[in-house]
Length: 204
Image (tube, rainbow, N blue to C red; front, side):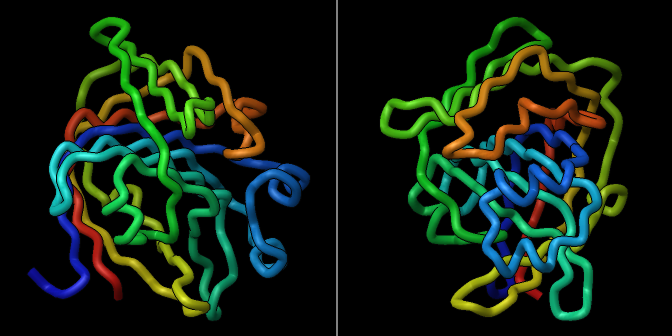
C-alpha cells in the first residue's frame, strides 16, 4: 500500500445543505482566515460508521461548511469533526478531530438513531429513515476537492470509493450549538444513505 493511503469499509450518511452567510460567519467554527476565504456553495454533514479499517472499527461525524479559496483553487474543508477512536484522531484525515462517544440505535428496518456525546453530554442526535432502492455509486459521481491544514500547511486529499446507496430523510434532529454547528436550523437539500461502501484516502 502506498504511503499515507488508508483503506476503509463501512456505511453511513451524507446530507447536503446550503448555509446562509450569517450562519457561516457565526456558527461554523471557522478561523478569521477561513471566513475571509469562504466562497459559498454546498455544505454537508457526514456520518461514517467504519466497520473495517487499519485501526479497527470506529465512527466519525464531520461538518463541511462549503467551498474555500485556497492556493488559487476552490476546495472543501472540514471545520468540525468528532470520532470514536483515539487512533483515528492521530490519522487526521481531512483535519483534526475531537474524541466523542457514538451510539447507533436501530428503530426498525428503515430507521435508526445516531447519538454523539462527550463526557456524558449530548453533542448531536439524529433519527434517520432510508427510502428507495439501493443503487451502485462511485466517488466519481459526487467527487469534490478536499483539503486540510496541518502545521500551517495546506494538505490536499485524494479519495476513491464505491458502494450501494439509497435516499435518506431526517425524522428528528437535535444539536448542541456550542459543540457542533446547529444544522437543525436548516433542511437538507438531499440525504444519501450508503448501505455499504469501501473507500481509500491518500495525500496528494
